[in-house]
Image (tube, rainbow, N blue to C red; front, side):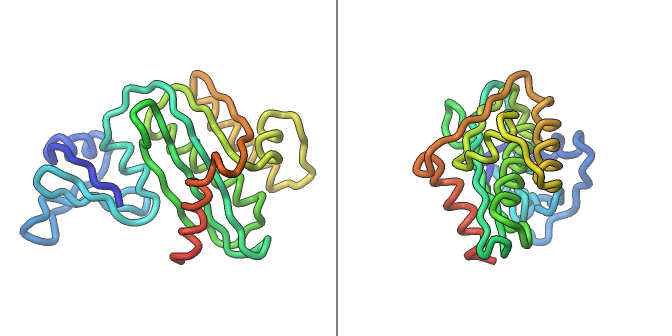
Length: 198
């Protein structure tokens, strides 16, 4: 549950400018509330608490972003292949972890979950306003398909690859590389935690 230390009046103005509807708080301590993308921002004096699913989109609207480069780590998990599945992602820049998250995605194969995790990581990087994204994942199949080195006969994976390539056009520069699982352990942990919590 992200907590953003900020002026709640400025935060409110940002959300209004983004077209969100601001509601009155539910308690005397809550200044206001706003819902977006399955999550809710609750304003208190000097801070905003974001709760619910998919908090990164709302968080991106509230945090300052100067563009620049971000490293995006992604991982998908499937128990049963196909079975209950989830995604995990971590965005890191020179200042440290920008945001991270994990969420369930229903039933999927491992490769489908990997693609959904990649899509989610790229969407979050875009929503935060980064100019360049350096993507890292431990699925060699997904990395090589996105780079165009390997093809796929699976229509759903092909469609996911197209979606990733479309999202990447929003960046000035991008690259994707395969990394060992131990380099990607936090995204893996977030994906598995989402399954454990479901």
